[in-house]
Length: 247
Image 1 (cartoon, rainbow, N blue to C red):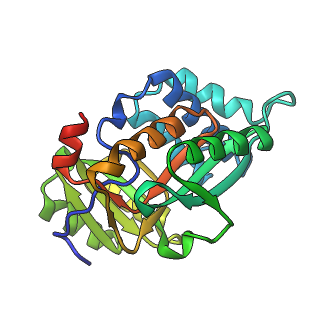
Image 2 (cartoon, rainbow, N blue to C red):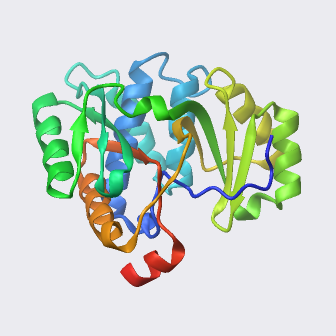
Image 3 (cartoon, rainbow, N blue to C red):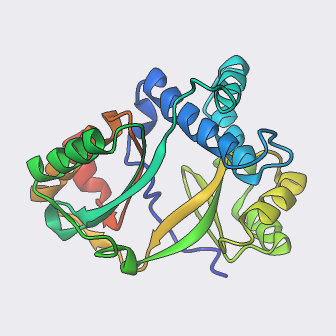
C-alpha cells in the first residue's frame, strides 16, 4: 500500500464543486432511486443505497430530498433508469469512461456523442478504453479527517489496498468486493466519509498540454451539465500551471 503517492482526483476537475446544486442533487437523487430499486429500500440493509445516501449527505442534500428519492423507488409511476457506460477518447488522446443513468437511451447516447465529438474526441466500442483502468472501490474523506499517517493507518487496519492524499482530501482504494466492509470499518475510526462508490482508476496518466486542456475542460463541463451523466472518469492530468492559465 502506497501512502505518499500524489494522485489527482480524477472524478472532478478543479472547480467542479462549483456545479449548480440543483443539478448535483438531481444526479444524486437518481443514484439513490436506482440503488433503492436494486435491493431493499433501507440503507442499513442495502450497501449501494447506503453509499449513495452517504454521498448525498456529504454533498449537503436535504434529508427530505433523500427520503423522497428512496420513496420514488417503490412508486408504481416512478421513473425507471437504465445504467449505461460509454467509452471513448477526448482531446490529447485521453481515455474517458462516462457513466449515465437514463430513462431515454437514445437521448443520452445522442447528447454524449455530440458533446464528445464537438470537443475533439470520439466514442469507441465497449471495452475500448476500460482495459486501461482498474475497477476498484473508492472511499473519500476530506483533508480534515486526519493527517496522512492517521488515515493511512486506519485504512490499513480496515483492509484497504491503497491510500492517496492531496490538499483536497484522502482517497482510499479497495477491491470491489471489500468496498462496503472497509467503508463501515473506516466510519468507526474516522467518522462518516464523503462517499463510497465503485470507481475506474487509470493505470497510466496522460499529461494534457495547454493546447488541449481548454477543449478538454469544455467537454467535461458539457458532460457535467447533462442530467443523465452521473460520473466521468479519465486518465488525464492537467498540470497546475496549465489550469491556472485556464482559470
